[in-house]
Length: 222
Image: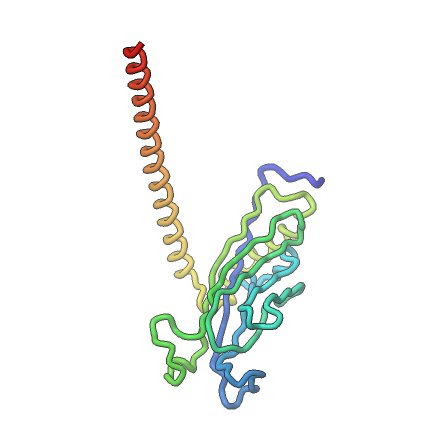
């Protein structure tokens, strides 16, 4: 059993999501004539880093109407390109180079149309590419000894490419907004925890009082 290195932590930023575009008359025709869009779902380094030192394979679970519905990609680029007409949720599972690390599931909603507009296929805006991306930081706490070197190589790539995002939608401003949102969620969770702690303490107090009252009544009955 490989030993874990105490007090070591590595943070590996990635971007996952999809880009979709309407199939035009000059594009290669889809195998199914009812398909209106060509899309790609992907997992990438946040700044264009090679993520293969830490990620061994990526599986994409598509809608059951696709054959096969599960696509396993074992080398970069970790992406799947398909055609279709509808939006659905895709389960993305990351398997790491260290097989002792648990696979990480991610969920992405495939987006073919702008969120703030009706899905009208004939509208001008429907002809524009739609990019939907999410920023994720994979944190490895006390990783196994043999996993340290790949993590260090990945961290060196991140340090060497600060701010050079390959994403068309992920920007420092969006990162700040997302960080603020996550802190807000964290504060709400902490507040909820404190609220439920108070309720639990009140319940425990009421329980003890009830038990004491029952003992008193039993004593009086004797």
